[in-house]
Length: 134
Image (tube, rainbow, N blue to C red; front, side):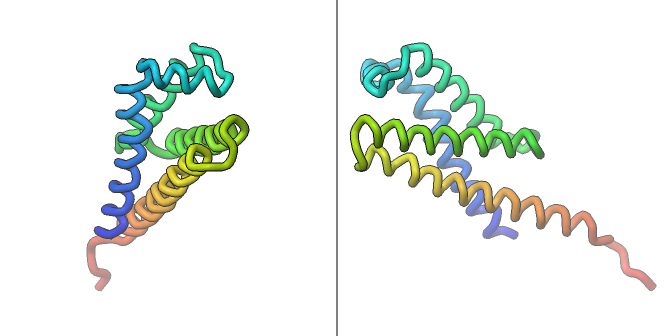
């Protein structure tokens, strides 16, 4: 159980830093604005994307957020990483810019897998009675 928690929190923390903290700190820089416009997206798309990334990553690390809502957060990040890979591949060609979102998607898949392993362990522990049957 400890290993499951460690892997889950490391991968989820990485997603939080990469998708929550970093966009919150850098989304209004000139380089970020140029990157969004160079991909062909309007300026408001970058702001909207930052709001969704930050709110989704915060909700991902909060233990109070559970169930279907957390599933949709994982799905939203999956759509974002796949879309980022496609957008970068179309504009820049196949290279680091188009592969990096897929690498981060791999980290997200590990986080998602270990999220479900944690749920399964929590369910099995609560289903087992703590008293002995005589």
